[in-house]
Image (cartoon, rainbow, N blue to C red):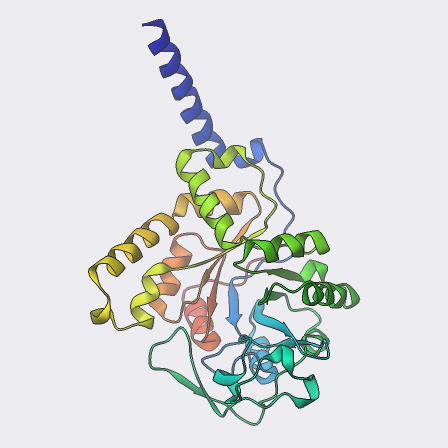
Length: 317
């Protein structure tokens, strides 16, 4: 009887303390400093409106008033840091070669028409700008715009050179970097802990485990950005009639576990920004903001801006 009372009182105390700290995390953790806040994030510069990861796309997004540019980085044969999503040039340029095997001056231009990854049966036809830019081109052109850098390969030289560029352009307070790969994120943090990092995929799984066991309020977190997909958008990318029953169930389960308002509120209260990607229609924009996401990443920056303007979702201060 005494043992049962002890166990019950211990569990009750744990549950109540966890619930209190989940709602008021600053009782235990110092709120992280937020050098910038981003609601409107242009994925690859806005891949649905201009050729992805080009200066034209970035200029269009910035002129529109985007809060952040999201881009991807690779290293060329002559160790130049370039902005490109794929390691292989085939999809984007038609040339079957690895970026790492080609000198920057020899990189081919983008094709005139590229598919939009997160929009089914959608293609973007570009204008005159088909050049793969250097990361420093972006930093030169947009000195005050936050940039979200996806380090696409586990390459120590790439990580070091990106860090050097961030420092050179005095952008440690305007940059977030990382990758879904946990080893890359660890190397980024070790190379320059002053540049905020995002949660890797294994760390997202750990985060969910901590959240659902009630341990999250007690655990310190080094990451400052949670960037997660909205699993339900799979039906916007693939033909829903082509999904198997198990695929539908996994999508539903992932969406239910990941899209949690309580989790988002707890993280934002700790100064951790929550970005949901890659959303391209008003239904998903609304859902993400209603759940308490800090920002939305989109291929269609004009569409997102129109939604935000029409719903009073002004830029965060």
